[in-house]
Image 1 (tube, rainbow, N blue to C red):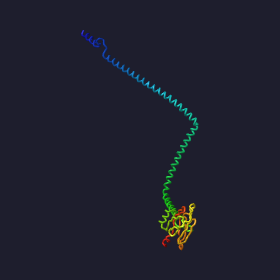
Image 2: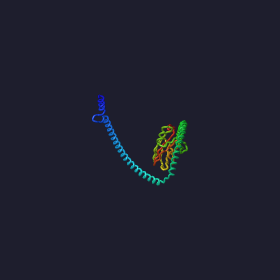
Image 3: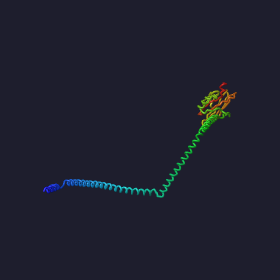
Image 4: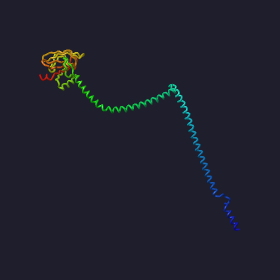
Length: 278
């Protein structure tokens, strides 16, 4: 009897009272419901995002198709313009090929020219090194030549007078006359004589201007020295007019370096001995 009561009590503990489901089953069902809800929400969200992306991709595709159509139109226009330009220029494929070949040839020629120029520059630098020593010698030769030219110029300033005698240095203007005076080789007396019947004194000589020819730069004067009258006709500019003082061997020279209307300007040149004997 006691064993039967114990068996019935175990059976009643294994089945919940009132026939209700076990608690763990309720928990499992609740979890499944949550999982299914989350899965359904995730699928919905994924479908919504995918739909949005598909819409955006569709819009981009539409824009790309429109751009492609525009590019095709532009390409067609450019091709038409290119064809027209090619026809206008008369360019053929053969001519273009020749132009490319010519450009390549020019490039090659330029390269060779650059190489030759580099070689020539190197050679010139070598030559410059060897010529540097010769520059000093050339400078010395130039200086010697300059001195020779200076001596030649000094000689060219002398000329033959109207008496056929070699003159002294000739001054061609008042500045050069002052230089002759500074040298002191002879005595110089400048004059500015106008056409007149009167004489003008210049050192040991008196001068009277008789005639002037400005076109031919000639003049005629009468000289008075030691009571002796000497006429010099048709003398030219810078011509040494020469005469000897009476009773001496002193050669006096008159040089006119300016001839104007009824006027001559120049100087009288006499040896130093004349001034000492006066």
